[in-house]
Image 1: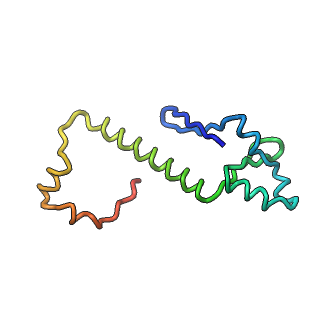
Image 2: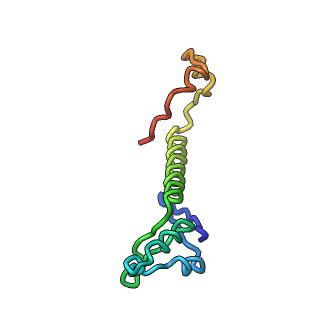
Image 3: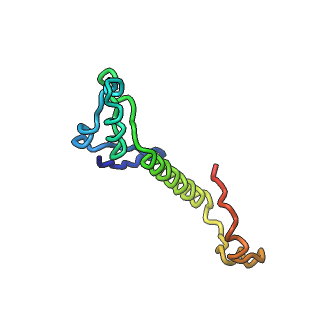
Length: 120
């Protein structure tokens, strides 16, 4: 299935190519009619949209696809935060990373094993 990303200010929306989606629709009843394994196998290849009462209600995907999606969302949020910080700088002078490290007496080796902090 092809996913198209659409950016709207302060929101990211994932849209599905409508022709590809038709192949990935599964009624919720298939999960209880002995077809669970087939549905799970399908979800390993591409996200599956579960239909409940004739409406798309759930998305079932493999764990690797889910982790990739979370990573992309985190990267997008990190980029948004970086852009906001740049905007909020209001033109104030900045210090290049190498100059700051020299001023603090740090080397690349000093910080190589430092864990990356999580951004809140």
